[in-house]
Image 1 (cartoon, rainbow, N blue to C red):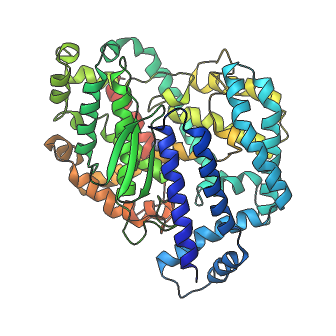
Image 2: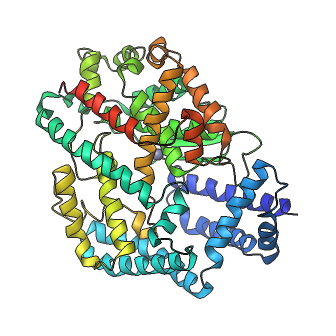
Image 3: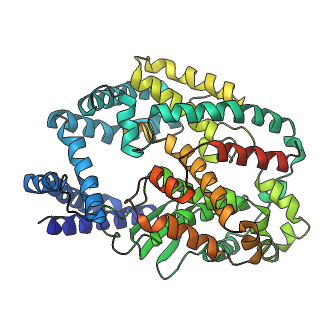
Length: 492
Ligand code: ZN
């Protein structure tokens, strides 16, 4: 019987999620030195279940069982993936890798603070070597190493699919950005950086989340340094935001983004939640939902028509004389910059493209790690027209590689493209703009819950796109959406 193992696993994982949440939000400063011991013990318990030989045999026996329901088959598939991933790697090597990863985070953070890439480079080199070796153990005959890593995050998109996707973006978005950059002086964003009382921001943000469908009976909003979403199950979904007194749009669009993630988790079917099939289809599909709300809906004029008056009432001194059109242009300004997490809707994918191209080099060639900062800077200059002066604002900016995580970045870009394709289909089935203007956007939320959220992991992202849109994934909708939008905003 697998059931008792899963119940214990769920319990330990739920506890860990809750401790993680607590650490990022309200934990008192002195707590961690002692609480971390408890968390370590819980993690050990979880590890012991996962490495228990009876448990592993049960999963692998069930893997080819044709009698399983879709839910059961999905659960077993997810569990088997983890077992297969680790069982092919010699235990000693895996242990060495785990130790390296546990040290790499602080080495990276120090290097980033001191703008000292050379002190992180040897660690990065070792992490790359481990992942290449591990991918080699795991690969199917003829499979490329980077495809093994990409498959951990998005099973339906390999390098060939992503090469075609990014090539299309490069061809269309790089020239569009050049056009947009020439006219950037015309867009005024100064009023967004006046002083905005953070308590007032907080109450407006809560109303905004509620308006989008965030259910406060099943969720809470807190503050943290970096906004994120986590959940215990579909009746306890937690998001965070971060208020800046001098940047009104920052918290609002973080809240909208995280609410998009939260709605996904709140609407996963009851029979799937609290099982290993009870998450989003993939990181990219999750990101598609947050960006759908943040960018496609949340930055549109129709969305703000019923809301902007309330925002003006909340901040009459700052926004009383700012028209809706001026506001919409400001929240859609696109400007090439160096930092991914601060980038806008148009340039975001170009930041991802740089990382994707470098990851391919790291995993599939023998590139010298000391050459990476220059390659990074060259690519930024070529695609975005800006060149980092330091490695802190260049190759050291993201944490992902210090976890030994390669192959995740493309998810962010795919998520944007999924969102555009889903939006195009939604428009065929309902008058989305009229719904936004009406002040009741529940039909949009219901559409996504019904067509995407409820399925959890029982369909992969490509199957979801096919079922929702009636056609396979294509970047066309995304490219068209961006071209159309920025030509309109910038009057090109
Ligand atoms: Zn997100």
